[in-house]
Length: 90
Image (tube, rainbow, N blue to C red):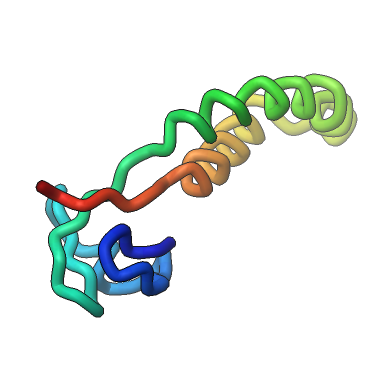
């Protein structure tokens, strides 16, 4: 993830992004930033994700005897973590 002000990379697992509170502080430029969901990425990616799950993963999951809801939860969590972005707090 990149800081919207200084364009420096901030690791997803960094201390700056994993602190409590709504607003975070960039470790490079000390600007207040906010973690938000990129709705365009989420809207464009959710439909192909559903088709990939239905046609690819669903038969595999039922063949191995797992619950499909567990796999849907894991895939959705990973997809939402990829759709996060940083915004400058005004």
